[in-house]
Figure 1 (cartoon, rainbow, N blue to C red):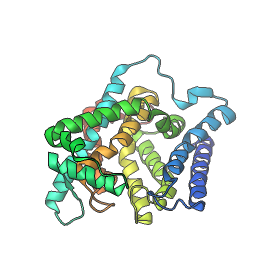
Figure 2 (figure 1 turned 180 degrees about the horizontal axis):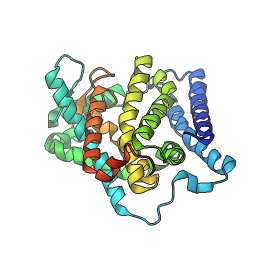
Figure 3 (figure 1 turned 90 degrees about the horizontal axis):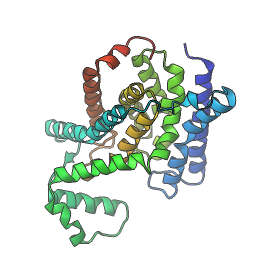
Figure 4 (figure 1 turned 135 degrees about the vertical axis):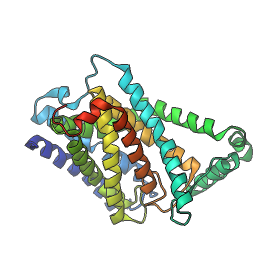
Length: 311
């Protein structure tokens, strides 16, 4: 059974974040390219953390222990394993996109670009789409010379660094709630049930941003359903990181790597249909499902928690 504290947390988390999104929409933020969207989305990310802090400190009087922030004794291995999983996400999704685009060339899955000239074209297209000044040709020359695999590796390592630094406060905005307070309330559940419930709630929490155009522009209804599916497969990887470490910092690291490497996928993939050929579309969902299957297959102790209660 789920106690009233979890319901109170979710009510506050949804209320805070959805109110921020609705205020943004009222002031004209109606698309993911509109001025102010980044500010609205960034502020909404802190709804779960604010809710968790209120519940832990104001209502439960439990302090920081209820948020999963303690890391004593410190263990490096869970962080390294989490970073490895995070770094593998983009290459796995790119490989999935190659397979899908090859099997369904007209299916809207886009295509993967893995040549120097292709990367230059991608950068030009991205800058034009963002309305940025055209990048001078000589500044793009290194993209033509360096092997794409090295560029991919460098971008992923940069995402890890960003996840440990500038991205960390924003990722905690969500993770203190979902894998901090809420995870603690559901820790006695079998992992598969916890993953399913958290993924569903996490996906629905994104609904106002999806309506605005986050991830699936032009598909406000189908986009919510796709976001729920995406969060369900991501919830397994996040639950594993949280369970393996015993604290919320590894899930914050994973969240930061994912957000920081989304642009890397765009650098190597010509987008297809928003619901299919994107890192958050069917290509991404299938790739993440494959990665989740590997994680569960390799980690026997975690696999045994999937259908048994307790942490």
